[in-house]
Length: 497
Image (cartoon, rainbow, N blue to C red):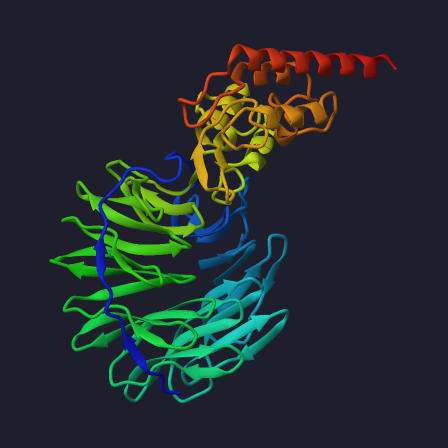
């Protein structure tokens, strides 16, 4: 099927570099030391291939808490990909075969006596390219069933998958073209030039096509094909997440990072050094850039750019999922796999909220690699105070979230950035009760809401975030004290029965 191509005449915005992402703090953890490559991330889950002590390459998996060595055999395993807790890779089990680890069990997906390589995974769906004895074809696996998606006299390469939608490029007489399978196979391109490097997110497909001697970026949105770039320099390595597309373009002799958000194209970087390997997740973009002759990692949050690394070593091959980032670090002697998350975002959902406060309370004295947000070497009440006062996001206004910021005070049970009568009413309802949380006015991680929580609220009553809010009048303090005494009397009364 031949599709019309729409050339977008979009204004190009050049972005000035900023310095922060959300609350501006990140926490980096070393997951592995040894020969390592191809880190991939999905949520907080990370996979990579590694060799800790000179043996063949094996597959590793990090679930946000613990690192597991998935394979342990006498042959090399490599090129892992991840979706949720599902990890796929190719292993040299005689010939190259495809394997799946679902967080518990490893399954050999192929065992056909031919070469199967470069698997991709999305949920329970797996695709790869396999040799049929004559050329490369594309295969799909789900729930124990393998389906051959392509069958022709030419080779099909580079399959990618999103849900059950699969895209790949195939070589025909006029050059490589892009194909989409979403229950049926559709040829997205039909032209006299080569089209390569397809990527897919939902119904959105991107690729590069060589037009008038240089590579340009194209997007198919499920209905229409659009040419996102039209210039005299090379554009390559497109990636897509939802309606967001990123790529690298060689402008004035060096490579820069670009973002198309469904409406506007923005040049994210504008410098005299090389920026490569962009990856995108929702509105967040990560890439590697040269600073003082070595590679560093950068992230863009839709507004500003943050330099995540700053050293004399090589940091490269970044991958991103939400606000969670993994990459490889090499100091000239030792390789490491690192992961960075927003400081305080223990569940990796991109927000520091009441769930994270309760999680910290449940892990007092726990893993300092995860929960030591003030980085003083332990996990205690100081970390709770730091989390609340500096990192947690508050929202208020109409509609909800119309006003928001980072950092509030002890006593702000509903996290609206104000310690006021609404929080006091919550405390009154929960006073003396056990199995309570921050949203119940339990501000010190104790077993129940008590006078200590009331004292914390009294200390900050009337405070408004950001700093500079109203100081409570004496009458307000008196009202709070009176209500607190009433709650204490009620608790003692209940305890006496």
